[in-house]
Image 1 (cartoon, rainbow, N blue to C red):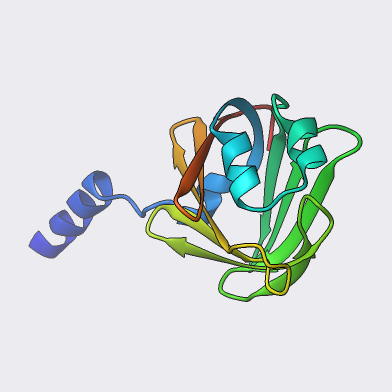
Image 2: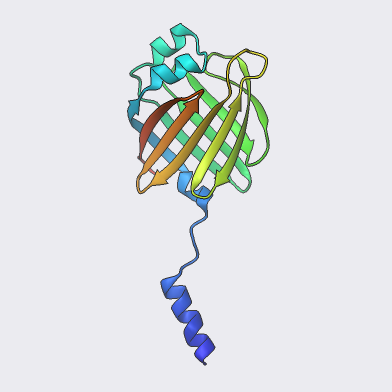
Length: 158
């Protein structure tokens, strides 16, 4: 019966960890950005695009059903993107400038990492790492030594 006692203590003090993916699910509203324009310039975004979205605070939504993920990023009724993917599988999509890109999403510890390749465009690859800290999602994007940060807050029902 010592084993039963040990099992009960293990359950009480070491509950099953929440699946890392589940923490990203839901609605997120951007509440702040740092260095976004410099990052978009370095990533080769069109001047009209980064001028347009500068100062806009986007909404982000993650939906997870089994292995299937959907990420919706919406700036306003003119600019929104919907990505459907599976972790660890590269897929083709359009970037903010409506140019072809490929992305690969993976979980690395508590981070959701996106590697975006803009092959054939002469533009550099980018890496975006997203982490959840309480009711905030922190997104750090890096491209050729330039780093931008966005902070989102969870809102609404999921």
